[in-house]
Image (cartoon, rainbow, N blue to C red; front, side, top):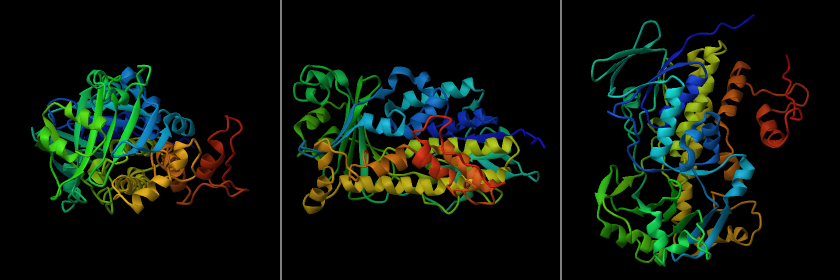
Length: 472
C-alpha cells in the first residue's frame, strides 16, 4: 500500500549558519520552511572565521553552497603544530585527510559562508523573515506550535526548531535553568591582517611564501601553556586570520574590547614571525568567551514538536573548529528525519526521537574532542609536552602514524570526526527505528549496515558494495 505524503510546515528560530543550513536541507526533504530571525538584516554577527572540514564540505557540495561561495572557499596544503618558539613538532598534509574522507577541507570567512547559505536557501523557496524576534511559544490543542514575535506577528508550525544560538529563546523556554558557561578562564582574541602586509614584511613573509616567492597556504599553530595561536588564509588568500588563545584569571562570559598592547603582552616569548604579525593588527580587537552548553538530558519538549539544534543545545569550545560544523550536521540529520515524516514513514515525534537518540551522543563527542584538543595544545612544558610531541615525530619524518596527539591528522579522529556523514547516519537511525529499535543487519551474515559502510563500502564502486538484505 502506498504511503500517504503529508504537508509539513517547519519553523526555524534563528538564521545563523546552522539554521540556514537546516532550512536548505529541510526544503530539499519536502518541507515548507519559515525562518524567523531577530536581527534587522541577514548576516553573521560574531567571530569572522570558519573551517569547513570534510564532514560538512560534503553538505555544501550536495546542496550547491560551494558554488554560491566560489573562490572565497580556500583550499590549503598543510597543517603544522609548533612550539611557541616556532619549532615544528607535528604535521599533516591536508590532501591525505581529503583523500581519506573523499571531500575537501576548506577555509572560509564566516560572512562568505553565511551569504552562500542564504543565497541557496532563497533559491530553494525558504521564507526568511527578518525583524522577527520570537517572544512566546504556545502549544495548540491540535498538536501544532503557535509562535509570537515582538512585533505581534504570529505563526503556526507543525514543528519548531530552535537554532537561535547560545542565548537561545527557545531553550530558555524549554529549559530555563540551563545556562551556557565558560569551563575555565580560557578565551580568545580574533584578528585579521591583510595578506599583502604579511607578504611585504621580510620577517613574516616566510609564513605565507616559499623560498621562490610563491604563495603557500598553510594552517599554523603555536602551542604554549599560557595560550596558543592559530593562523590560516581566508577570502581567496586576501586575509591572514589569527585566533589567539589565552587565559584570564576570571572566566569570560561576554565579548570584551581590548587594547593591542594587551594582546602583545600575552605573546612576548613567541616565534618572532607571529609576534610581528600581531603587531600588524589594527584595533578594535575583541576578546571572545568560550562557552559550553550541556550536555543536556533532552533537546526537545514533552510533545516532541519543539527541538533544539546547534549552539542552543551544545555550544562548545573552539579548539577543533567544530561548533558551526556540528550545527550544520544537526540540520542535515534532522532534515532526513523530517523527510521520513513527509513521505509517511515516521511521525513528527518519532523523527525528533531519532534525531535525539543519534545526534546527542555525537554532539557530546564533539564537545569532549574540542576540549581535549585545547588541553593538549596547552600542556605545560616538560614531560607531558615532550610525550605529546613524540607521538607526532613520525609525521615529521613522513611515516604514517597509527595514533597521534595531532588530532587534525590522527587516523581515529579523521574517521570519527571528518569522515562522518550526518545524512547517512540519519538514514541508518531511521531504519533502526522502523526495525523496532534494532540495527539493520544482513539476514545471513549478521553484518550491520553501518559497519558495512565504514569497513568495506567506502571504497567500493556501485554494484560491488556489500549487500545488506534484512530478514523479511
